Amino acid sequence: MSYVSEVLEKVQRRNPHEPEFFQAVQEVLESLEPVVERHPEFVKAGILDRIVEPERQIIFQVPWVDDNGRVQVNRGFRVQFNSTIGPYKGGLRLHPSVYIGIIKFLGFEQIFKNSLTGLPIGGAKGGSDFDPKGKSDMEVMRFCQSFMNELYRHIGADIDVPAGDIGVGGREIGFMYGQYRKLTQLYEGVLTGKGLTWGGSLARTEATGYGLCYFVDEMIKDKGKSFKGATVVVSGSGNVSIYAVQKVHQLGGKVVAVSDSNGYVHDPNGINFDTLQQLKEVERKRIKEYVKIHPGATYTEGCSGIWTIKCDIALPCATQNEIDEASAQALVKNGCWAVGEGANMPSTPEAVKVFLQNKVLFGPAKAANAGGVATSALEMSQNSMRYSWTFEEVDAKLKQIMVNIYKNASKAANEYGYQDNLVAGANIAGFMKVADAMLAQGIV
Ligand code: NDP
Image 1 (cartoon, protein in one colour):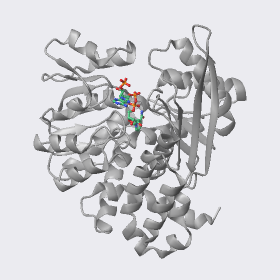
Image 2 (spheres, protein in one colour):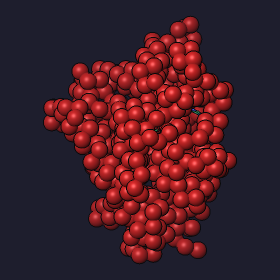
Image 3 (cartoon, rainbow, N blue to C red):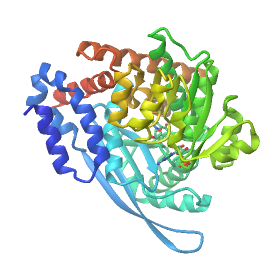
Image 4 (tube, rainbow, N blue to C red):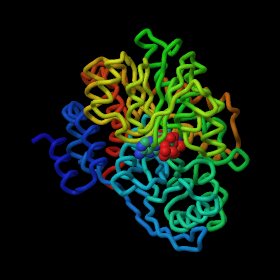
């Protein structure tokens, strides 16, 4: 049995009932086979055994009182996966589907993504099964404060720096930061995605969506293609999707569909960015409201139908496993020639196979959506300097980082016999840096 198979077998045995975590580990480890063959020192130092085991997992109670005076109890998580190349870094997700397996899958992916950015950040993830949907601002505040009442013991500007993810945007980061400051008397860059008047970075809000487009732009340019005149489908209508829509339009493409967990909107004239932003960021409404403002658009219940819309480029930006094999086949059949993953692990392994077999240019999440965390790391730098860069400065750094990620992933793929396979390339490029650092630092 190969070293990789041995470790995979152990991961499956020791983490039962966590299919998303196993899926993420399997995808990375299988692509590392040729790396491990070429580097027996990684086997000797048990690098794979160590990298699949979180350094620390914290699970805690989050009690809070709703607007009717009733006590509610949620479960909070922080998984500090790997801190070899920098302080733990990764978002917080608030969604009813959250359990330890989801947080571990996201934390594991974060190790490699953060390494790919070229910045000094380790991997972590956290969150809760709290559902912010339909809650009042005061309920969200009480939840966030209670969540921080425990989390603050485990984080710090040089220890672990959480950020946003599904269900956590500027409002939630604000409530959490306020509570952290109150509890610790520290004014430090302990969270990223902060407001601009209290330590946030310009372009952080836009960063994941913009970064995704910069990555895809570089990937398709390498094959002589461009966004100009391309029809694009973007799933979701949250932080990542909104700014992906804006950047696609700036680059000359046309986004014709967006969605939420209830359904999708198809607007053949192109999704109107201002309406989208107003509805989702300001009014926090459902996406179906869009068609009231743009009668030329149609709304369809159910989210997977979005992948049957004819497009050149698909940008899944909602959630994990949202594109299955059938959806991938529908995309290919309709002529889709590029996919960039804005969400984490949005394509099932079967879907990825369909894309690769059909020579669809495929930008995997780890590489393609790393712009968010990269800009979070730039926010940390600015906090340390007590200084802030202009929007243009941050955006230029983000763009350069995304171009470098593409180049490094592409180079690693070719070096290890995976010509044009950026899934393997991103895994290898991200892994090498962490593995070398783990070797250098000994068994700790
Ligand atoms: P938001 O909460 O802002 O938006 C999420 C969007 O996806 C909403 O439109 C939501 O619809 C939809 N969605 C969520 N869960 C599901 C589901 N189970 N089925 C269908 N649709 C769903 O989150 P973000 O935009 O921040 O994150 C989106 C993805 O991008 C996630 O995978 C996240 O991990 C990833 N990501 C985010 C980064 C960031 O900087 N924000 C950085 C890197 C990756 P609804 O409102 O109906 O729930």
